[in-house]
Image 1 (cartoon, helix red, strand yellow):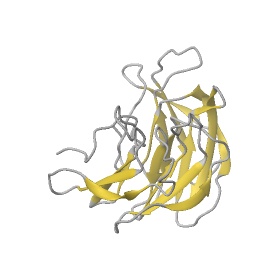
Image 2: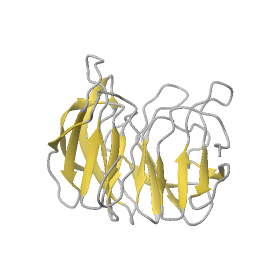
Image 3: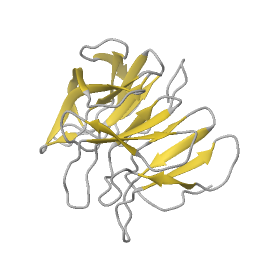
Image 4: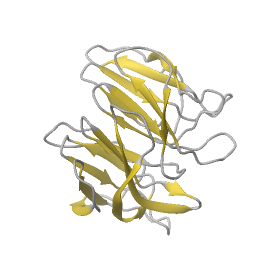
Amino acid sequence: GDLAYARAFLMGGHSSSTRALFGNGYSTTSPYYFAAIDYITIASTGNGADFGDHHNSTNPPSSGGMTGSSTRAVLGGGDTSDNQDEDQLSYFTISSLGNGTDFGNLGAARTVLTGASSSTRAVYGYGYYAGNNSNVLEYITISSTGNSTDFGDQTTQLNTAGGEGGGTRGLYAGGDNAAGALVASIDFITIASTGNASDFGDMTSARRYVETSSSAHGGL
């Protein structure tokens, strides 16, 4: 099917076993920056429907990161219509429709970041911060609210990468570096602990704006 609105730079997607959410984004026509969250029922086919809005509906961000648990989806960061990087975190209860609720803030405002999670912890990485690529990893406890906490550092500074978690490990793939070159590298972390990321291997080709999905056994 189709999304309810045509848009680019979606803040990724996240799902439970029954429902998937797609967040915010940017359009070439007014209102340009979308507060709306779409949802679909995974077992059926059909177009996306309105789930609710980002908690900052007056100046919603695009190009952030979305991850969470089977209960909650949490949107983090992005940039807004006045070209400001954001540090906001907004959460949604996947099983019920409604607007996002303020979760807290990232340690620093950044855009084109990505996230990976277990059932209890979400870890946001990479992105673009204050004119530079970021290598910072920071985490939240999904079932609570509050500001993020430092997790460690990634192996290099990148943006526009993709992230995904399989319960135990979080992986972050691709992106572009400070010179604008695309990369094929994959980092991994152990989500339950804190510490720096390690090299996992490489994708078959270098690319950015990577979108990801995983089971507990493998990732695409």
